[in-house]
Image (tube, rainbow, N blue to C red):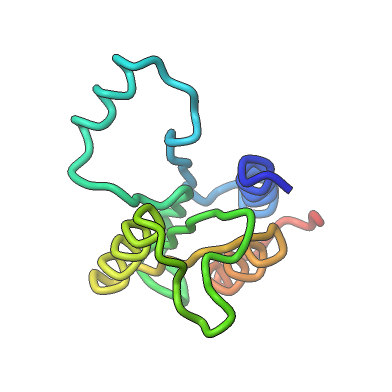
Amino acid sequence: MKESDIHKSIIEWTKQKYPTVLINTDSSGIKLNVGQAMQMKRLRNGNGYPDISIYSKGSLGSALFIEVKNTSPYKNNGELFSETHLQEQDDMRISLLEQGYHCEFVWSLEQAKELITRHLNHITPYNVG
C-alpha cells in the first residue's frame, strides 16, 4: 500500500472513530509549485515534522504525532535506516518526546489504530471498524 493511502486511511478512521478529537495532517505530500514549496519551507523552522498531529492529551503524552511510512524505517536489528530524511524525522520524534509529546513511526493502518486507541483510551470511541 502506498504511504499516501495509509495516511488517508488513518485520517478517515480517526475522524470516524473519534469525531471530537482535533486532528491535523501535514501538507508535505501535497504537490506544490516551486514558489509554494519555497514559501512553505521558509515558514517552517526545521525538517522532519510528523505527518499526523492529534491534539488531545492522552495516556502517551500531551499530544500524539504520527510519522507514516509504507514500510518499516527500521533494520532487522532495530536500528533506523541511514537515510537523511529518516534521520531528520527521528530527530524530530526525539525532540517531541523530550517535550512531553508522543511520536511514533507507523507503516500500517492497524499499527496506527492500536497507537491512537492506546493514546485516546480515556475517550469513548464511536462504533466503527
